[in-house]
Length: 565
Image (cartoon, rainbow, N blue to C red; front, side):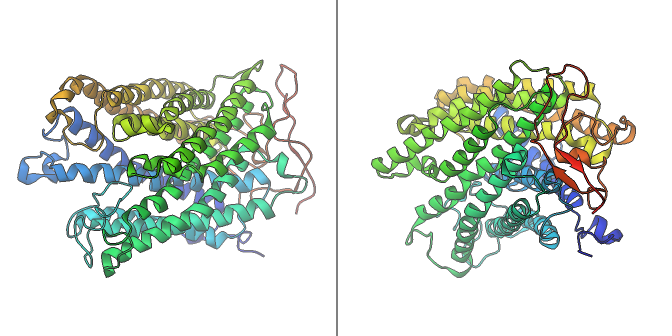
């Protein structure tokens, strides 16, 4: 009997688990805990910009007793460093690849578990030490990391403590290295599982688009992460052993190439799974097969391929040769074409459909709207002359957050409302879910749309007090509105957690397939037992074959069952 089939004990079930579903939930809980740090740092940033050099509420006196609770300029650089690092490496990526990938891939391909259960467990248990290392800087000599989440040398090799020291910047590099190793192990597992463990009859073009998206994201991780991990080790060597890889005597700009070679594909690591989720949710809740299944697959593959050819657009202001900048400008513009196909794919799926306006469907529709908005501002940034003007302004902050929050996080909410019945056997409260969507959608634009406007006006990012420049004095009011919207947006998410708590206790119990969907995960019990499926499956259809009937029971299950395996 294999490790994945053996009945686990308590320790194996809840701590060192070999079950992909438990590991997926571990990623979910871990990321939610790290979200507290990410949100707290973002609200502290917004407080400083709205009311510079005033006492921070709740935590101000504890953090800054010597100044009466007023933050220091140095602490502001710590805030945006920790916010960006935690949200990318320990919240969004672990949720979209760790939680979704672990929980859904075996279920959606008809497998009992991942190909390498022990490696899967290790990919999670490397993440908590990585997160501890990230936050350890607050208690280390020299303070927490403060070189930004991009850690550009020579600043990052000299801030806090210098070579040989153990300061926060060194711990930051340890953290990034550990998380890189963990994500690489997970990517190996996902690719192997999808290639080798698909149910009989489940060929490549019968895979749900969520699986396709997770598969492509894993390839991006496997191709890009070793580059960032190697760069992190080199920069760590510069700090600890006084090597000269990225010092002023070496090649400081080399780090930018290594970082963004992974850093830009990382955007697609979080966006592609959200695209796959939204395709599945739109189809199920519109009761219609997806429009252009194969073009959608090819578009995601094109996005992934072009994603490795555009990293230089983050470096237009680095002094690169204009001919090279033109090449990156062209490749970045080209990536808008397959991205546009994915948007048209979603809209065409809705055309002539029978939409059920569930909470999951609303968040999927919100993803489409906000992704288009963020993508349009991204087109400005593809142009070198425009980017040179707005590169260090809030235009970039607004664009990035429209994509990552408005895109991937809305995709995550759609996934949670859609697959919560599968994970728990209970439905979430639809009324609370719709209220959660409405406030989140409106407040998201209240925060990030205005950032484009103050950015065009020239307001600099990473500046603790922009109002020391007389030309920015008139931007106090929009910054205040952004901050109030951000506080309300954070508080609004309490509805989501209240909904989870209520639904776990009193949500309506459901059977295996409450949405009358077609894909294989709905053949398992809700929640699935150990090994997932009680009977072997043979796939006979695609995942989106809905009948033209306008009555219940219009779905055609993707597989039939045969005798017990």
